[in-house]
Length: 451
Ligand SMILES: [Zn+2]
Image (tube, rainbow, N blue to C red; front, top):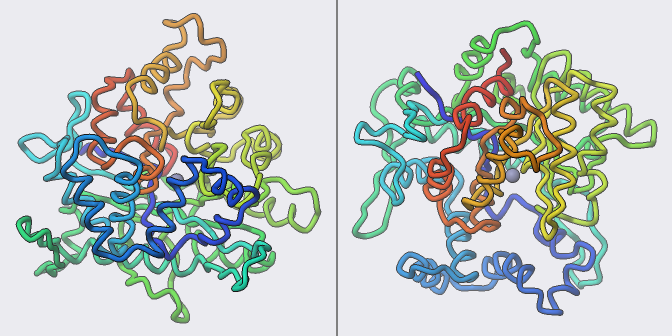
């Protein structure tokens, strides 16, 4: 059986991010007034959600479906349309369009086909982002910025997985309507029949917790992890629990073990991977040691854009992580987005990551959210075959063992030139990368479950 891995995606709706904090990040409002179109596009998502009546939104989405050339408004409409789908439907909707939408990457036997290789399963890692940061000062009248406790997002995500394994999506193509139909027989035994296996990552920002809470939190979620269990055993242990919780995380005595496969960190929200003050440092040190001892994989957001609430590029930069890796050289760490730097051709972050992959055996990087053009893949192909291209001077001849396929769906609908998972996947298939199967199967399998 072959599995296609997407190591980086999200199951999010508009209630999860703390949007007002995003708006009030330093300078964003000023840039909006200056008419910066890129910011406008992004703000359109927020504005449209808050102010546009539903009917108008549907019109925008419809126009998107009928015109060949998406305008920024269409991109926002499409993205918003997906974000507005209740989270419990999102996985089923994604599967429905993958199987029946265009472009289609499934063969006549209804299996995913990439580069001539057929995959029976698609493994998704939805990443939880801990948006529960402190309020940001602003001068508006209703200046009580809401906190967004991460527990809501976790509940919604677990509920979505629970529903995915218990229902089919019944789609009426003519009326463009859908409803959930319960599966008839024992769903737990029939989990294997489903296309997706879902291994979420828990988001944590150590600033939001006391030291003792972090200890308890890690024990509750990851207490059964050990660095001696085989990759196969770990996958089976997590698969067993998959979809079992119905998502109501507020009840007491919830058995939270084996729900999450790893941990997601997001320095662009102000999380410092290696803080100076002793109290904060003690917390992250505990986290890293715990992860090393039990071989728990960490994904850290690594690009100079994304969901930002201030200028935290210094925390996000791979250089900051060099300090962490010096202390914890065995840490299993994925730098997301291959250190993408928007508005720069220098590739400094990326080259720094390549250096780290050479120095540390468990350092990985994913290509989520920036791989939607043939040019991107051409450059990546050169990096994966440094000998063939003499111009590449920052080389790791074994880099092809450290790069992971990721989509960043559904965020990629907003950030990218693609308007569906189908299209995004097709771009990867068409690239005909050397080592494509390493990127979408062997490497993520090793990263996620171990050898
Ligand atoms: Zn992401």
